[in-house]
Length: 219
Image 1 (tube, rainbow, N blue to C red):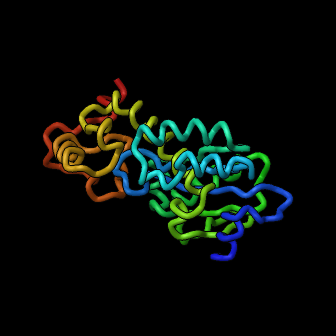
Image 2 (cartoon, helix red, strand yellow):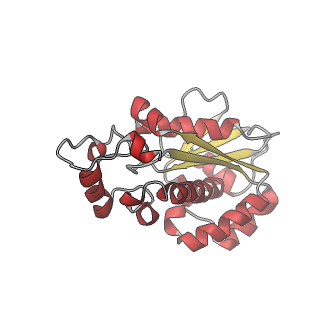
């Protein structure tokens, strides 16, 4: 794996087709889907993105990510989003749903990559394409870092749109993560249809007096 990583970083791969990086965001959230992005970068774009500051999305501010994602989309040969829904998270578990979202994003790419560089240590089940896992790939491998930024910005924008529908949960600020304010709202109102009921803070609180029903949510 380390040899593959070094080859990729030095741009010495000799595949007929491109190499893709894939990463996900939202595994630790209580609310909303898990989102993955897959990115294929041209050799000519690597230095530009490195100089622009592309790195692990968690190390960047929201403004930095918003700026960089426009450059990534402009430079990339192709980039695609894959989503696994809350229902799939609750049915499969969060790890398997995350891998499903990654697979969906990769299979949308055109051209299909010769190699998929996957953030983390879990291989993607059912993926027909060659793949290599890279632990902490979002901070070590440029295509994965680019994917992490794209996935984060796309998911944050989705949560901001959903925040208007579910104002009780302070989603504008927490983006679905389990902050104190978010958990307090869950205790008071119960879970919305976009909360992950397989996560313990979202499980029904029978003592909550004002839990929202599906009919309340969809008015």
